Amino acid sequence: MSTTTRHPARPRGFSLPEILVTVAIIGIFSAVAIPMITRTDRVARSEVANQIVTSINRAIAGYRQCGSEILLNANSDSGADETSVMLLLTTRDAGVVGSPFLQGTTWPATATDSTETYRAQWNGRFFVVLPPGTSGTGLRINGI
Image (tube, rainbow, N blue to C red):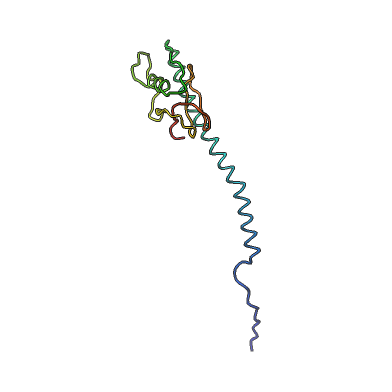
């Protein structure tokens, strides 16, 4: 005769306190991680904008080394001066040895005064970055 021991039935699933603790832990991780991800994205966008403007300013320095000067006054209300400088730097045979100084299709070309985007603004000598939230017209930095 075999004797079998019966175990009391175990409840299946999780108890309410276990579920609440798990949800609380996930909430704490989310509260810490989301701001860090957002900050990382903001820093990356700022770095890309600065690198693009640095490339444009290097092209301006190359233009000046060939004996030419860009004589355009800054006009913060219009994107015409920024567009003119970019046209000068990207036009083939602009009368300067080695032109164009700036090549590629990703360079800024659209003037905007939107305070929601990064913009490159001409200050009369070189370009500066206008981050989101600042006023002024400049060339929209594409992809940012």
